[in-house]
Length: 221
Figure 1 (cartoon, rainbow, N blue to C red):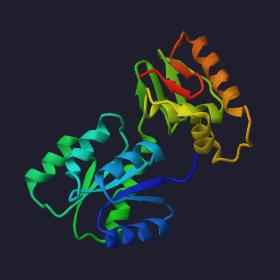
Figure 2 (cartoon, helix red, strand yellow):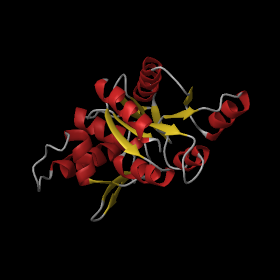
Figure 3 (cartoon, rainbow, N blue to C red):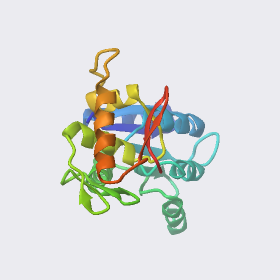
């Protein structure tokens, strides 16, 4: 899989630049949005692995951003806030935030929190109905039976199951799984998807994998 990508939603460009430098030095790919609306657009289009979200955004409250993100995604969200009250922390966690940091914070603490969230995301089992995927064991089961997949088939399924119902284009799958190294016009993605569909059907997983003609592929959520 490709490098881990972090989206920073922060309207203060000085703070955003510091975060970008710290995270880039730690080996992450960093994107930046300076408003809630731009952040929601980037979260949908760029598919980050984690979001760092400032609460004091110019267009609307960061808590609203958390709620909107949670409608379609389970990606980790760490809130950056100056509001150090128990009530505010309870509110943020109740809205769906995974963690929070009180400003000002030390870069080492930020990186430690980021690593914890990303480690949990990559190690926790993922499920959709009777389909379960264990990233650590690289094990997939459907209705209790093991689904034997190639490494690339496993990576594709892991990508799709994180956001059931979301349609991934062939280009997006190629970028995520092969880091964009597939030649133009290659049918490698289609071949792997056909193999994955056949293996799901062998376990009576008819219709789990959805093809959107001219667009791409999705798991039926």
